[in-house]
Image (cartoon, rainbow, N blue to C red; front, side, top):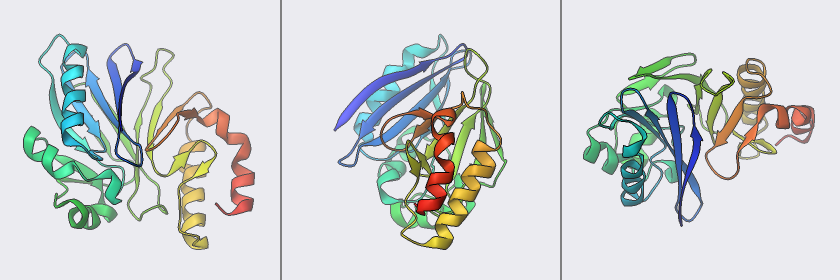
Length: 224
C-alpha cells in the first residue's frame, strides 16, 4: 500500500508522510523551507514510492531541495528495506543508533555513517533533531525530536516503534526489555516534553504525550 499526506506545514519546516509496505510503515520527510535541506526518516520499503514523496516535496522550498540525511529509527527489517537503494540514489549519508548499526547493515546492506547516542543533535540546513535513545524494542532504537518547531513552539517526536497510541513497542515478552523501554520512554520523553508534544510513530495513527500520559501506570502494570 502507498498513501501520501502533508502532516504539518510549520513556519520553517514541512513534514510529509508516505505509508508503504504490507505492514503499513510510516516514512517521514522533513524539508527546510529556507534552505531546501531534507531529512528522510525510515527508508522502510518501496524506494520508487519514496522517490515520489521526495519529488512531491520539491515545492516545499523556494530553494532546490536535497536529501541531506537518511535517519533510521531502528534495525528491524521493515524499516530498512529501501535504505541501501535510497542512500545510493540520493548520495545522502545515513544515521542510526550506535547499538543498531551492525544489525542495520546485516538487514539492509547499508552502513551507518553517523552513529547516534542519547542526546546527540543533528543540525542540517535549518533542521535540528535531537536523538533520544530508547532501549528495549531494539538495543539502539532512536526517537528523533524536532524541538520547538510547531506554531506554538511545541515539539514533535518521531518515535519509530518505541511509542504508539496505547503503549510502548513490542519487547518480545521479555520483562527486562520491557522495563528498559518503559523506563526510557517515561524518563526521556514523558519526563522531558510537555503534553502538547506530538508523537509520529513508525506505524499507524499519530498521538500526543498528553493523550497517553494518563495510561503510563497501566502500561507498566500490564507489562506491555
